[in-house]
Length: 632
Image 1: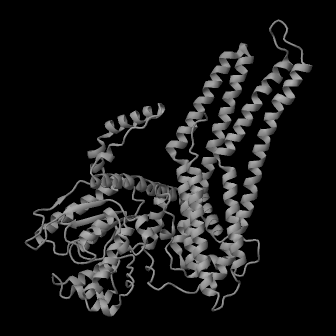
Image 2 (image 1 turned 45 degrees about the horizontal axis):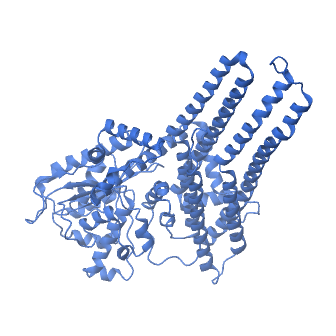
Image 3 (image 1 turned 90 degrees about the vertical axis):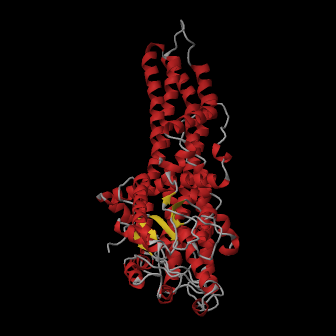
């Protein structure tokens, strides 16, 4: 099978009944094919750049039906196993239909990954073999995995949510709709985060048993149909947007009608709206990745970004950089390659974002200059008025281009993803089993949801963390991480912090000098040394000095505004905090490991990565508060 491309996928989780009726299978296959086509059309733009992954545990019935249809329509299969494969096969002996083990093996052979769920705490292979609660816990574990790692859940069931069994369809649907309760998640933080909550596509289908709650196959409204039902068509939504804009102009806020819906309907609407927004980010990322890899310059950028993942510390390296890069690619190949893509795209978008503000403030100063000239040069007033108007037109063109192109949004998202992937790579190098997605902060769910989802998809290709965590870092990985992550990041943040602080100080000092020059130097010169106007006409020198005295405060304001909108001082403080963090880690991490220090070193890497993720989230928040907008 063709290798999965280095793109962020759309993951469709599958849950459903095992005892589907044979007579319903053709219609079910048609409906599943139509759903896949609808997702490609409505959310991926039919461009084929975003791979679709079907996440199915290959149980009889619904799981296998969706896997077969998905593979037939170009999707990839990831098959999480609730328990070791040989033990799992016992559930299909004899099974509901003859030949089902051969079908299971054939589908499993087509899977690009088949992660096996670790045994839940207190569970064991012997307890699973005995059946009962032990086996049920493993089905619950795979149900949680599917809910947590899917962007959308496809449920083939009869809609009966009253009777729940561990890992059963009703429970998995509830996980996806409402989140995983603390008693099952085993963590209050994980339940508060609830990143697994998302939309569910329900295909209502009867079961073989006579008590089935459904009589015929049907598909509940999903996706855009749900949004149209509650928000109306395009015209109604445009009018609503215009009304919100007008209300905002007058300092009022319109009440969102979704808060008057029943809780279940409101959550469904929010899930589909969030899904649309996050899928759009994924689609855009993949399209930009394709464009980047299609040019010689883009490929050179990718190579530099991959090279920069293993940084350049100022201290002597204990491991050769080429060997360190090779090791990273061997341990975490997809994370490394996606880091290079995210880092290269972030640099491109950062350049656009910085140029947007430079253009805006330059044009604003030109408009201010025209305004000052208008008061002093009546003879050319029409020309100046045209230039004044063109400057403001230019400002709003730059603003519209930046706003609709989402330069700042993509810059922040791509940089956040790259920095999270950096932590993921080095955690893997040292042998840490921690999940970067679980370690990502939950205080900014709107801004960080796309990053967390991207990190979740990477976990599909890794073995889930064992119940017993590693107690010592890999020695080679420790040498690489200590030198190229900790020392490298310390050198980077020290260098960048000094640069940002100096740049911010230059802008602020320059603005202060300009403000002082006008009232305390130029105005006294105008009064003392230039002749007063004769016949209402200024002398050339006096006219020039008056113009400069009016422009200097405007230029000072532009410099201050430019510094503020780029958050130079705030980012400088952020760099200083990170410098001190990595400096302290440099002091604490020993060069060699022994039995006493090894467990502490692994904990230190975990804490360092968690703090780096939190600081990165705070950095994103700093810039989110400074969106591109026309100067006021």
